[in-house]
Length: 161
Image (cartoon, rainbow, N blue to C red; front, side, top):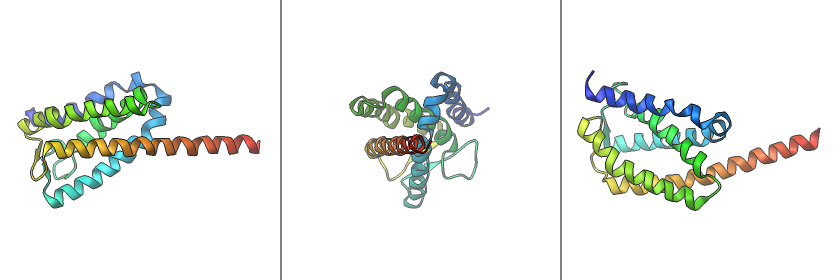
């Protein structure tokens, strides 16, 4: 198996191996937010393709402009893990995201570039890093909104019965 396919497969499958350690309730609790950021990232990837900001050479899903193995593997599960470990402390959440996004933007992406699954064109690593931080702040507050809505629904349900 060539290195690109191996990396894509690992990026997709390996994070899912950690899911049993998350446990069911936190997984379900943070899955809507992880899915939401996945949609935003997919939309951003379409813009990136048109503007030639980066190029994805997906080894598992040929013809896709989106790195499906990254989005539904590493990105989705890492988002849930970070929320599980840091939610309720915005400062801890933000610092964790800064560290994770820095490591990804400046180190992991270089591995993807070296192996040939991903390549920045008109975008630089630092721009991707800052966009990632901005998006992490957006989804933190999105999760807060979701939790308020669920709390209000539970409150209304308890008032009815």
